[in-house]
Image (tube, rainbow, N blue to C red):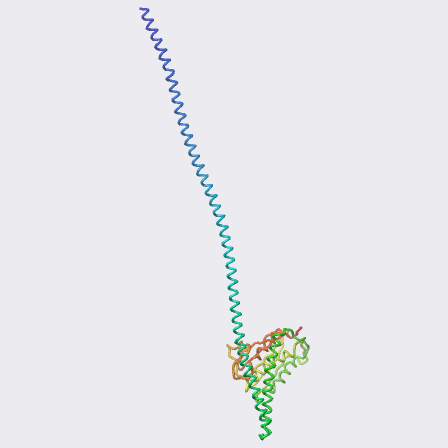
Length: 340
C-alpha cells in the first residue's frame, strides 16, 4: 500500500517535472513569437516611415529640380527677350533713320521742284519785265531819230520822259537782282554810323516824290527830336523805305501816302501807310515771297518786298503788314535804335 502510494507520488512528481519541462519551451516560444511580431510591426512602421521620407525626398528633389529648371528657363527667356528688345530697338532706330531720310529726300525733292518752278518763273518774269522797257526805249528812240518825222516840242519831251521812265524801270530791275544776290552771298553788314533820325525819313521822301501820282499827298511824321542821333545803317534803311514807298506809290492813285517814325523802348518804328487798293488778309505773307505779285500785269518782278524783309531781318528787326488797317495798306518796320 505504501509502495503503491510512493509509486503514485513518484509518478505525480515525474509528471509534474515533465509538464514543467514541456511548459518552459512553450513559454519561451510564445515569448519569441511575441518578440518577432513586435519586430515585424516596428519594421513595418520603419518601412512606412522610410517610404514616406523617400516620397517626401523624391517630391522635394523633383520640386527643386522644377524650380531650377524654371529659373533656367526664365533666365534664358529673359536673355532672349532682352536680345529681341535690343534687335527691335535697332530695327526701330534704323526704321526711324530710313523714315527721316525719306522725309529729307521728300523735302529736298520739294525744294528742287520749287527751285525749278522758281527758276522757270524767274526766267519768264525776267524775259517779260526786261523786254518791256527795252522795247519802249528802243521804240521811242527810233521815233526821236526819224529825220522825216516832225514832232512838236511837247511830244518830244513826252518821248524823252517815257525813255527815262523805262530806263529807270530797267535800272531798278537790275539793281534788285544785284541786291538780292549780294544779300544771299554776303552776310556781313557795313559798319554802323551815327546819323540824325529825322534824316532817315527825309531822304526816303525825297527819292519817292518824283514817282508819286499827281493828286496823291505825300506826308511824313516824326515824333523823335530833330537833334536825336542814332547809330544805325542809313543806306540799308533807305533801301527798305524806298521799296515800301515805291510799292505804295505804285498802287495809290488817290488819297495819301504817309511815312511815320517813332521811338519805342530802344527801337525805331517806321510805318508806311497808304490809301491804295490794299492787300487781302490771306495774302499778307504771300507778298513777301520772291517773284510774288498780286497783279500780274503790274510793273516790277516781285522782289521789292522780299528784299525789304531780308534787309530788315539782317538789321535784327522785323517787317510786317498790319492786317488791322482797314483802308489801303500799312507796313511796320521795327529795328534796334543803336546798332553795334
